Length: 118
Image (tube, rainbow, N blue to C red; front, top):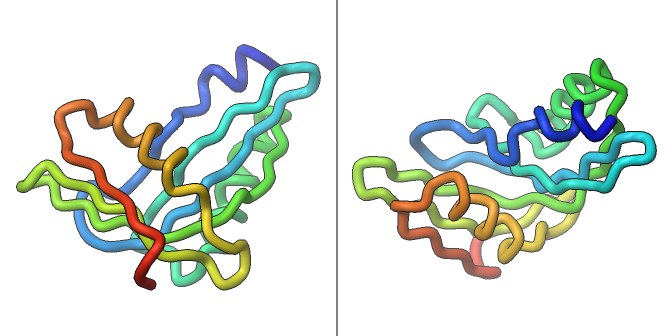
């Protein structure tokens, strides 16, 4: 399970635009948990993101829970990502955790977050 967990990317987000995201805690049997960020413009609801992520992870014997959601504004031409907002269904994700994950994935970006906004 640890090996399957290590193959799960920490961050999968769209390359440009404003879209919903979820923070998901992934668990393997007998393995430590890991938090991942998923954000895509195709998702009408935060639940759409979580359900697809859960289906993908289940194939590898991993389970997950949604820790909350929000929105991402990704502006690659400016090398900026802003994390904000919340999910009506799942509540507000810990944007500080999301920001740290994004900084690791996009080290040359300016990444900011705020609790305001929807």
